[in-house]
Amino acid sequence: MTIDMGFWVRDFRGFKSAGAGFDVVKPVNVIVGKNNIGKSSLVAAVEHMFRENAIQYEIAESVEFGGELTEAELRSNFRGEHAGGDLPGNHWWDHGARFIDKRIVWREYNNQVEVLQVLDLSDRLMDSEKVRLGTLLSTFKRRKYRHVRLDADRDLIKEGYSSALSLQSNGAGATNIIQNYINSSGLDRGLVQVRLLTALNDIFTPDIVFSEIVVQFHSDNNVWEIYLGEDGKGLVPLSASGSGLKTVILTLLNLLVRPDFDDKKIDNYIFSFEELENNLHPTLQRNLFSFLLAYAQSTGCHIFLTTHSQVAIDLFHGEADAQILHVKKQEGEVLGVILDDLNRGYSVLDDLGAKASDILQANGIIWVEGPSDRVYLNKFIDLWGEGAYKEGHHYQFIYYGGSVLAHIDAGTPDTDIQEAVSAIKINRNFIFACDSDRKSKNGKLKNRVTELLDAVAGGRGYVWVTRCREIENYIPKECFELEYGKFGLPQISEYEYVQDYLRNNHLSQAGSFTDKHHKAVKFSENFSKDNLSFRPELAVEMTAIIERLMMWNS
Image (tube, rainbow, N blue to C red):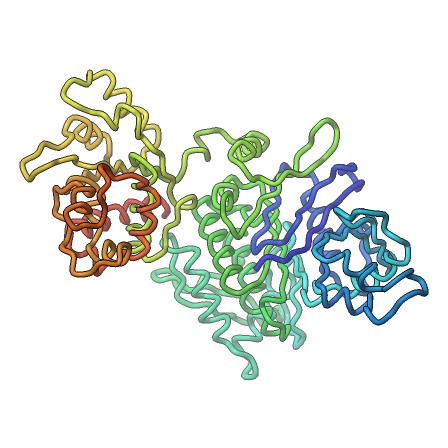
């Protein structure tokens, strides 16, 4: 769930008047930029935003908040039955009502609230109105949240026993917490030995599979240490493991165990994790970031990430429940830009020194002729992949309609075909899907292009030419029935033009099949593996395609 309140840092260290910040807080909020550019200052602003009332931060006077008060909140301090006094006229109709649906900008420092402005207000804001708004904002709804931070400088070390469960931003206290949960009868050991271990394996599989997590006591110096079990290796002390593994455990401990010993609901947490990608392979980064996104979506917590990882940009860019703030230096000052289009996405990669070969090639590319094919393929992938693979995260589509690939015939020169095939080879992870265009069982396939593609596919590419005339011949009759409200229809035949099917069954009298994308969306809404089983070869093709997606993303 998005928190409809934002913050902006201005005139602090490298930030000048333009500054940087977020207008809202989404489930995942990514702050990306070079080292020492100001990412930690933005985390400090988050800490100030969701602080406990008595705590004051150095950055306080440089943070501007923005948000709206509800009508009920406004009425509580601008009462309709009151008039005169510090506010001329009726307190509600002449004052409070004009702030409905208006964004208020304010600062909080030295235990006071300073209202700066109300956006899109038609006239001047009175001082007495500022005072009343400030009173409301001092108890603003964000107070229910608790901010938790995991610093970039962190470790998970051997520790002595303590009955107090406290996890610091540098990782101190983690071993004590885990040993208490494993050994104390009053705590739920399943949170560590089942839930945390399962999440750890979700992130590290298939590279490593951990069989158990235990602690052992070292009597020579009175400390406990965490051990992880691996099949064939026995127990391995965490002190002998890399910092990447420790980072993942600390992250999971905050997400999965902290709410229990804090006795607080998970959806009340705001987590800030700094540079989780350090010493993690790109595949593990992707797994970890994917886990964080899914966890925030399913639990209602909110996560801020500081990073200079290209993997994070690739995964979160274009995700509805995430946003990326690029912090960069421009004309002598540091400012922030939300990445809301592809060109800005390119700019952040350039700023981080990424090369096109590093990131701008997707994990894999699916080539289709047009938008309607993309709709059908996405639905097929969702069904056969059981929701595990998403466009934009695990693969990208490229349309080849209008290119030579869409118009191969006997007269197409070999040089043109070779050039088109070379374009596809730019990413070794590709799936090429095309209609056979056969009008009968004995009709010819587009042999020339598919043979060339098959030759370069190797084990990571795949070519799917429909056995039927075109992809619309895989639409089951149930979808036509639900869309047109006419039941008892036959299945569309393998080589029947879809518009002929519609005319023959009195569903449409149009001469051609138009508005294909809109119809694809409607038809695919009712696809299921059951009703698609009338074309058994579809399951074979999709199983092969899912195997490629799994390979690309593992």
